[in-house]
Image: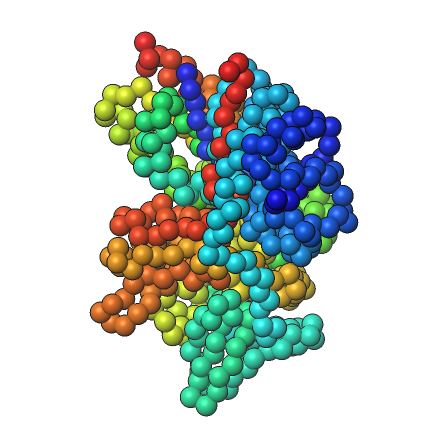
Length: 469
Length: 123
C-alpha cells in the first residue's frame, strides 16, 4: 500500500474517522504530521502540504523539496488554512477531499518532466570592454571577467552564454552591459523660450552660481523621471539648498519623482525642504513654458498632484536635467542566432532583481556610476549563488501546428522562445531553461501549437464556494 | 448569481482567499492560475458557458507584474471580451482587480461595481 504524508499546521483538523474514510476511498495509507523544520520526507510516495496560500508559489515549493532532498514532482500544495477559515472545517473537508482524490490520480501518472537546479558558470563578460573601473571592481569582488581581445559573437547555451571568436571559445554565466545613454530634454522647449536664454541644463547652471545675484529671484528646477545618476540628484540638492539658504532665492523643484532612496539622500532632501525649497510632483509632459513680455523671465505653468487647478510661476531661471533612455549598446549585433535581445528598457520593474534585465543572466549597469557598483556586484553574487530552478520540457511546441507567426516570440516576457531549424523548416522552440512557465505564449498562440506541461500543483487549483450546499 | 474569479498565484489568489475570509457576505468560486497573462478569451467565455455571470480577474499591479506583461495582457483581453459581450447584448461581464497581496479593498471595489451592473442587466 502506498504511503502518503499530509503535512499540516494542526493535527486536530483531521479526526481519525475522516482519515480512515479517506484511506478506504483512495486505498492508500495516510499519515498526518504537524509541520516541523527537521522532519524527513523519505519513504513516502507523495507529500501533501496543507499550508497557506502564501507558500503556493512554484519557486518556494521547489526550494522546500530540494532542502528535504525529495522529488518536487511528488509534492502537492493546498491552501488549507484559508479554506478552513473561509468555509469552516466540515465544508473545507469536502473541498480537500475532492482535491486529494484528483491530485492522487496525477501522482500515479508520472509526467515526462524533471526539475533541474542549475548554477551558472561563474564568469562574467563585460561589454564594452572599455569600462575599466567596472572591470576592476568585478575582479576585486572575485569574479572572473572574460575579456576576449577580438570581437565575439554570443549564443545562449541553456542559462549560460557561449562566446565565439575565430581563435577563441568560452562560456560565461552572466553578461554585464554598460549601455550608452541617449540624452534628450524632458519636454519640448519652444523657440521663443530658448531665446530668453534663461533656460539651461543643470550642468551649465551650476557654473552661473557665483556670477549672479540671486536674492529674491525665482529659480525652477525640472527633473524628469528615472535614469538620472545619483551624482545629478546630489548636485540638485546641494544647489537648491545653497540658493534657498545662503543666497535667499525662491526655489521650486518640479520633479516626476524625487530621488530619496540611498545613503544620506533623505537627509539632504529634508535639509533642502528646511531651507524653504518647494518640491512638487508634476507630470512634465503637461508642463507649459512661455516667455514673459520683456523676455527676461519665463512663465512656467504646471498642474501639481495635490491641486486640482494649474499653477503659474514667473521664473527668473529654469534649470532642467536631461532625460536618459538606455540604448542597448551593440548587443543585438553580437548575437549569433536570429533572436532579439532588445528589451533592456524594463529596468524599473520592481520584480526583477536590481540591475537584472528581462533576459536571464544579462545585467545592466543602469548608471555609469561608481556608487552603484556594490549593489550590482551583490546582485551578480546572489544570481551565481542561488542558481535557477527550471522544469525540463515545461513548454513544448507542436511542430506540425506551428506556423512561425512569431507571436510567442514577441509575447514571451522572458525571451525564452527561439527560432530553430534550417531555412525552410524553421519553427519556434521554447528554451526550457529560460522558461518561467507563465503560460503567456500558450494563451496567445493563434495555432494552439504550444502546450505547457506545468507541474500538477501549478494546474488550476479550483476552490468552490460550498456554503449552504 | 454565480461569480468566478481567477487569481495569479503570486498575488491575486492569496488576496482572493483573504478577501473572502474578511468579507463573508461575498461569494464566489476561486481558481489559481500561474499568471493572469495566460488567461485567454476562450477561457473567459468558457466560464460564462459554465453558468457564471461575472468573472473577476485578480493579478499583480500592472507595473510590477511578476511576469512583466501579464496584467497588461489580461486587461486588454478583458476589455475585448467585454466588447463582445456588449455587442451580443449578453448580461455578463469581466472585471479586473490589479493589486498586491494585502490590498483586498481593490477586490471589494471591483465587485461593488460588477454586482449592481449584473443585477441591472439581468432584469
